[in-house]
Length: 389
Image (cartoon, rainbow, N blue to C red):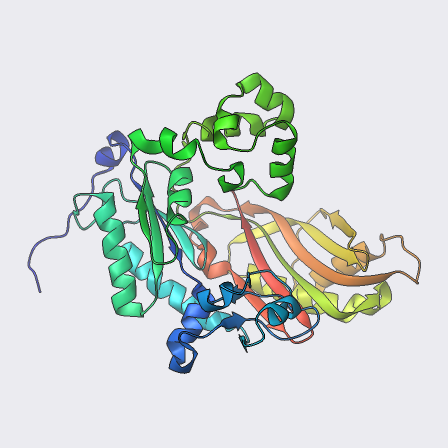
């Protein structure tokens, strides 16, 4: 063992140096973990999902993706696209274990880690703990360590900010490393489709195309006044991103804004039949929120009709719920505020806690520790954590 003392970054070094951000994104994470655990699954089309009419794909191996299988796709569609697919029920305990092992590798290099989910995170390596001379070398070393120690594959993006690093990590997937130097940002961004911007979904992209914006270059050529006229407060953010500007720091230990669980049913059911499901979801949310030295002020009920219309009801009681039974009682009271006739059927119900009051001394729970999901043969139940931005 080397007797050389580890390199400890000084706070003033971090403050004065330009940022060096690495975005690590695991490749087909859930499916890759399954293939690692079962060698018979390697090089085969693996779909992590339960079979069922209402089940959705949690993850797909790259062998399955070649057939067009994607995450969040209905499992029936995946089965039609890839009849030879091997369906594996998800094991989130196993995935969380792998995520923690990856996190331990990150911590060898920096304490500034912002997890986005179990399989991706931002790292600020402006000054790293191992004294490696470049952020590119840090990213390369992390990828090598993940492969050698965990037998998993990660892609990485290296850039001067989070926005560019996120785009870069996706550029050479799978098993890729891509670097965007500060002076290359503009020439790299200009030809990209606006859909490449993280956070720009299909709806926003359609709105952009309606005003003649298809590429980041088109976005760049609109002034701030025009962008704000079309996109409101988001216009300022788009103005900056089109220029490769992102001042958002890597934020470790990001606090939760909401915790929720929802269930899609095997068959559409009337509202009156949802009570046992609401109580079960309330228990999942309550267990997910315990131990967090914080209390939620707002309780939320979410419903989706068989016609896919989404209805939400919320209540901020005088005091937060103090037990699972109290949470369930509030949600059931919210259900009484849903004004539909007995003939209306529903396909989904969800329960949530939001508007958390956070004790400053207790911001120690990581998003990766709070994320959980359960998929059942009666449908899909997901316990999710929304984080602040």
